[in-house]
Length: 115
Image (cartoon, rainbow, N blue to C red; front, side, top):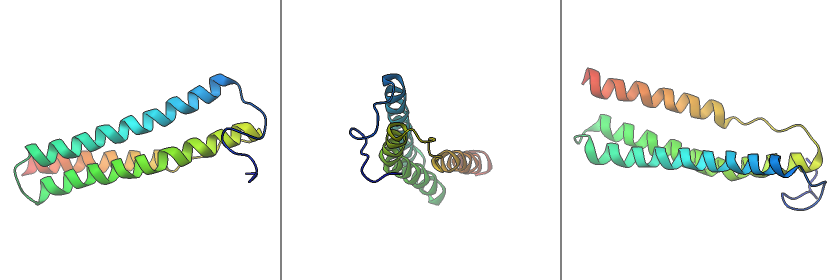
């Protein structure tokens, strides 16, 4: 990735539809993070006090923080790649989000069904 290319300058201007799609993806990551954060707060407030509820709420909040922290760097890498005419970079966040939601689901099943 060329260092001189910035997200809004350098390279060639990509088709605006791709830029807008990249922005929508960025906003979707943020909406997902916000939903996870709200879920963590709800679990913390509504589930009776105990280690299982705290763990479930904590997992939601940690996953939300990871997504929020990774959203802008991913948007930036994609924008730079489009301007440079390079292949779009892969993101490990898809795997992390999938594993995180699976872990949250298993934790919720344990919390609400087994307990």
